Image (cartoon, rainbow, N blue to C red; front, side, top):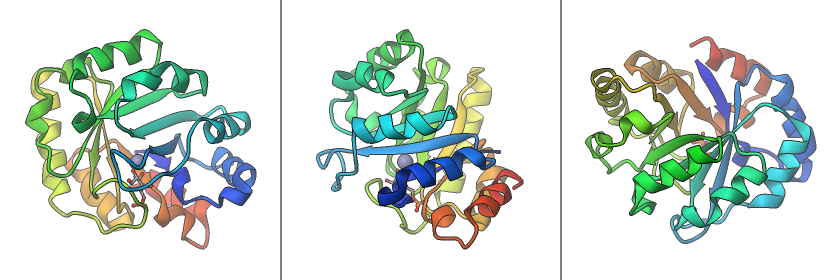
Length: 214
Ligand code: DX5
Ligand code: ZN
């Protein structure tokens, strides 16, 4: 299992300390949630924070854009060190072009689906994608309750990926813990994002190691 702890739940007053902790952990990627207060009802952070994180780790930065009109900023996220750039299906009227623009800059391209968006909407682009991010909460906030139907959705996506011969990785985001993580893993998820579960635990390093071994 690929583990991608969400920096959104870290202590921003100690971002250097927390980034170094994640760097020394068994986490494969660092999940970076960018929110604009337009696409989602919350604002998180932007480029200066990404730059600060990039300074303290060379791990894969898994950047999740919860912003309207992401096309405008693709180049800037590349400059700030994004390795994987994931945009929301619901924010991209010209998704095929957006995916192409991300890959052209040498980043991996991901598409995130809100809980109400069916996986079948990805049929025409699935072969072009490196990653699909299934949202198992409505995006905008950490610490929300896991939506149980996400497990079935992961299984459906896994089918679509197999049938189409796509190499896309299935990642899941929201309410992940050992219990939901196990169900998702059995359904075909290959990467798990976890924010409050990691940072709210007494020993984040051990929690990350536990998720890795699900
Ligand atoms: C939610 C974000 C998530 C969030 C997950 O909009 O996309 O990445 O940090 O937080 P937890 O793991 O606490 O549900
Ligand atoms: Zn996220």
